[in-house]
Structures are given as C-alpha cells and as structure tokens.
Amino acid sequence: MSDLPSLRQKIDSLDTTLVNLLNERARVSLDIGAAKRQMETVDPSKSEEKEPHVYMPAREKQVYEKLNRLNRGPLKDDSLNAIFREIMSASISLQQNVSVAYLGPPGTFSHQAAYERFGDSVAFVPQKQITAVFEAVEKGRTTYGLVPFENSTYGSVIETMDYLMHTDVQIRAETYLTVHQCLLSNSKLQDIKKIYSHPQGLGQVQEWLKANCPHAERVPVKSTAEAAQLAAVETGAAAICSEICASLYGLNVVAQDIEDIKTNTTRFLILGTSSDNPTKCDHTLIRFTVDHRQPGALCDGLKVFKVHNLNLSKIDSRPSRQRPWHYVFFVECSGHAKDDNVKQAVKEMEQYCLDVFVLGSYPDQRPE
View 1 (cartoon, rainbow, N blue to C red):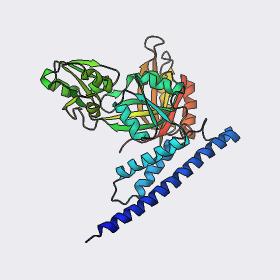
View 2: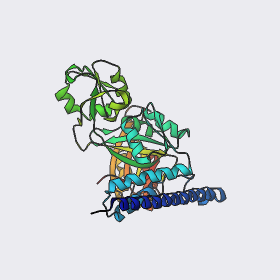
View 3: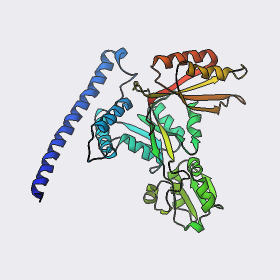
View 4: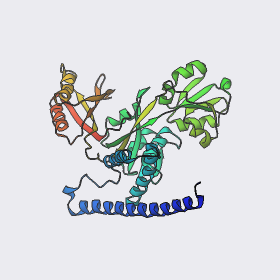
C-alpha cells in the first residue's frame, strides 16, 4: 500500500526543484535578451535581424520538437507543450513588454489563436477590424499582430488579403486553430429571425443554416464576438461564434459544433517588423503584379518556382483597384527568403513582373 504522506513529501520536493529550475531558466532568458541588445548596440551589422525580437518562432518550433522527442509520458505532448508555452511566454515578458493586436472584442477565434500561441504573460490588444491590427503593428502601437488568413472550409479572408496588397509589415509566423462554431442566443431556435456573424463564420455553417434556420436573416459583422454582443441585446437574434462567447456575453448555447466540415481550421498570420531566421522547413509569401498586356507574363512569372525547385502551396489574386481587370497576385512557396534558390527565384521574377515584394518567411507549422 502506498505511503500517501511520503508521496506528498516527494511532490513537495519536486515542486521546490521545479521552481528553482524555472527561475534558473528565466535568468538565462534574461541573459539572452541582454546579449541581443548588446549585439545590436556594438555592431548593428552583426545583429541577426533588423532589430532584436524576443518572440522567435524558429526557436519556439525547435523547443516543441525537442519536447516531443524527449517526452516519454505519462504527460501527453499537448499537455507538456501547453506548460512550456506559458514558460516561454513568461520568459519573453521578462525580456520585453510584448503586446499582440488581434481582431476583437475578447472571445473571437483570433483572440483564442493569439492566446494559444503567445500564452498568458503578454498583453492582448483587441482591435475593431482587421485593418486596425495591421495599423497597430505598422505604427508601433503593438509589438505583434495576429490576423486570420484563410479557412479550410471557406477560403481566403478577403480583408486580410486586401491589406496585404500595400503593407510593408512582415509575416513572422503562422498558427492554426481548429474552429468549432456554435449558435448562441437567448431565444429558442424556432424564434430566431436574425443571425449575426463574421462573413467567414456564416460561410462555414451554410449547410447547417439551410437545414435549421432557412428563413433567418444573415447579417455579416466585423467579428464573431461582436455578433455575440449584438445578439445578447436583441430578442430573436442569434450569433455564430465560439462557445466561450456564451459566458462572456450572457448567451445560451442553442447548438454546438455546427460547422459544415468537422476538420474546419483557420490559419492565422503573426505580423511583425521582420521575419525570423530559416528553419530548413519554411514558407515564403510573395506579392507581385504583371503587365497583363504581355502574353504569358503571369506564366513566365510563375515558372521560376519550378525552375528553382520551389513548391507552391497557395496562389491567390485580388483586384488592384488601380484600374479595371488589373490584379495583385500572391504566391506562397516552400523555402525561406534567405535561401539561395528563393533569392534567385525572386530576382528572376523581377524580369517578368511589374513589382515583386516578399511579405515574409516563417516556419511551416501546418498540422499533419
């Protein structure tokens, strides 16, 4: 029979060791921050980046991969990763006051994705629309920003794509969130006449709405949490959003997991002033335009990726708004902007394109 007092004593001893080790790790983290600042001050040309960053996606990826290799249980990988997320969050907050802009108000999927990526020790700054997230980073009001980029069910997020046409912020990382939509309301299902949500939210539940609320008015708003706020004060109204919004805004869960595809996942981009260093498994997003009057100009611009053995994982286009039928194209390719073959590909694209701009390189973190 186990000796409960001695087991608890062992736990207490282990906790003491953990506290000491965590603080030792934090002190080393502070030393790293000081070394970065000294490197920048003594010789800016030798700095790893344009400016010191405390959030290093490449290093973070290495840490998680090492944890998963070392872990022998009984803790699950996800549990161990969650613990270290908070350890790393606390460490970067010691080096620098970090703030992250996201599409608010609190309770949006953007809020959830930002929290799951950055942990509890940074400041989260809600913005009323996606464009404001970009502007917060551009004007230095926040350290980083997080914006939805595309959804596995409903495709690209248009507001994000349109801002990417002219911004000079850099993509620093990507992160993925499995999205489960709920219908929240203080009315019964049969009494719901109006449904609020972000256009992406409405798009992800079209089949469910057709089957269960075919006559309800669908009203797009700037965020899923704003939808919850509106539904909370309007009789006969509902919101499509995350379950957490029920407790945040005083709503009842009328239906859960109503997304049309159960693997429904949204990819988010983390914005900063520069990209991180290569990890040997990266993606790069490039923006360009071509002269449509030249036959084969787009084909010529794209063929350089095949020539340099670069796989394309995403191709998109948006009207340039400069003149009718003129488009800005986006391609996401394998590799990092510092890799030789990516450099050569971008240089060759300039022969066929009117302008070429690298929006950033970031570790490939697409879920298996």
